[in-house]
Length: 107
Figure 1: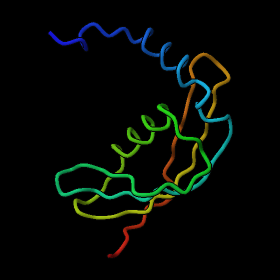
Figure 2: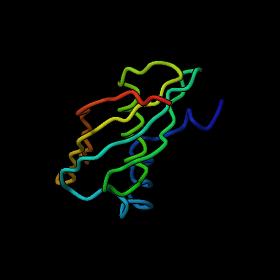
Figure 3: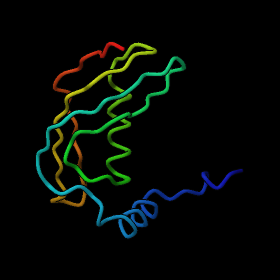
């Protein structure tokens, strides 16, 4: 039985907030793009981010969850224009990412 069986989500979120809370993206609306590669084995790699948002554990988690929803072809590179809305006004901090446009890049 691994330690992951004993994880307490509330405690984990509290530790994350206390440790990296100052890195949580600032409230607001952001637009930009990310360049990603879809590997032949299904893995997605973020090659470049052109968006004025601070990196944090929350951003890493949200952008990767967003990329799981984007339809991509294996072995291709895409530039994806996104809009991001950040709201930390209540206890449920939110980062909402929307796809504006996706373009396949030719190598």
